[in-house]
Image 1 (cartoon, rainbow, N blue to C red):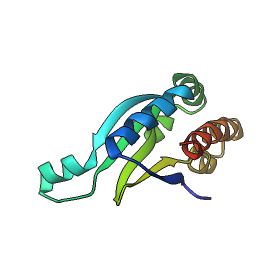
Image 2 (image 1 turned 90 degrees about the vertical axis):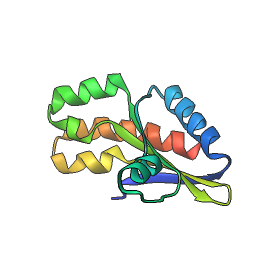
Image 3 (image 1 turned 60 degrees about the vertical axis):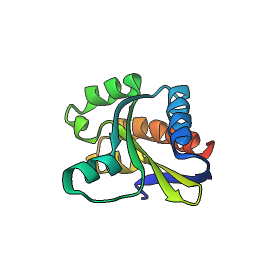
Length: 128
């Protein structure tokens, strides 16, 4: 099973980050963390990398249900969404596919919940 869903759109990088953040909010997700991979790699090891942001997104309703079912699930949270500048005005948005990650746990109820989260995230990405 594929572990992510992605879509490449045309646009401006920072505007796309804002668009993705707003789209996540529309499906009930907030951004808990923002990691600027390019900046971090430059500062830590002087490595030049393309603009690459990791948005750590969370829906408290789904998170509370999932954590109640499996308290170690926090190792897979939050749901990461990437915004990557692929050059020439092409911006790729990629998000983890929760159902693929959760399936191996073997908890059917949790897998069903993850499928619902996956559906929302995939819908969000596809509608950018």
